[in-house]
Length: 211
Image 1 (cartoon, rainbow, N blue to C red):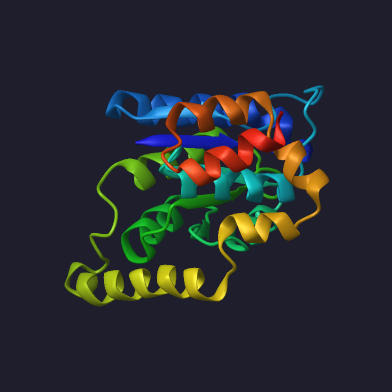
Image 2: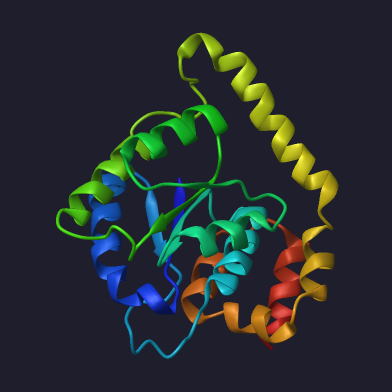
């Protein structure tokens, strides 16, 4: 699995903490982590949660990433920005059972975590356990298990509902403030996107913007 982790400006200082916990959990499982957002407070590439939404949409819809781990101060801005796009189903996660139940019941492809609110003593342990619960077993197994069939059906219908009610991704991105879209295409994002993009139309769209 290819996992993209992304921080915005207000929580860039937490990047190293979260990245270390994520890698510690998922790299022994054989997953690859890309750090596509801001890495520190003085990072030259300034991103808001709006930029994270653009990054997540392009990475997930192009096949460059299979899952996104993100957040902001409360986690709510990142949650809303990601869920504004087709092909992205983001859940809100504040403790390990949230991560486990979201993956087993809702079968989503992104998590939004609060990196300021409630981020106190033992925060790195909480996040580490979140990642263990999120990635420690195949998603979509259902909870309780006997409800798996209906839960998977509802999750698939929600994904299709978003595809039906949203504009196609490129068409929608062309209606977004071009400054927001272009500023989302940072070198770390492009490294992940170019390494795994399987959608020729999205590749051409992105490369045209960064010429």
